[in-house]
Length: 186
Image 1 (spheres, one colour):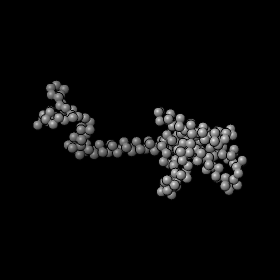
Image 2 (cartoon, rainbow, N blue to C red):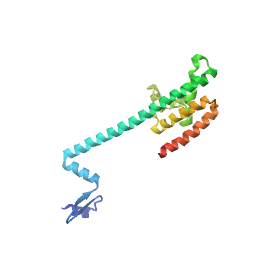
Image 3 (cartoon, one colour):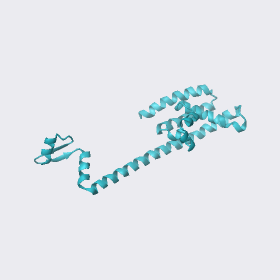
Image 4 (cartoon, one colour):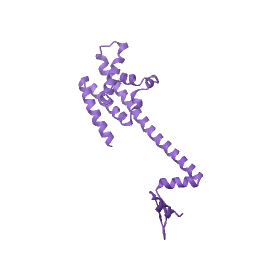
């Protein structure tokens, strides 16, 4: 049976045969790859290897982007903690050994503004990940890390200006939503 007869009798979709000058059998690329794989084991191996190479390259690109954004978040977190140290700690009601609470409060201010929950709430929801020393930012999207980086920088400036915690939270929450939307659209 010729390819043209087979197409006509089976009502095949994605493949057609044309006779005459410039004629031939044409198929959707998925069908062509499958046919090529069937008639040549070497071709099939080539396709598998190429697919694996492309997936690895794609994965490496994603990891690189994620690492860069995670690093950026960490850098801006230093700006944030410096602002806490210079502008909040001197007025803190906590003793020297409990000043870490101020840092945690400010980190949770950012977490709640962006994610809607505190680090403690995330740990309680994800105990197996918390036991491994992981946190919510380790599981954040690239977009969320980018937005968090911006919020850390903004909060540092607001702290330096003496803006109240309540005002900072409202501003960060609005800015986080707006920035998340802008990042998604780009």
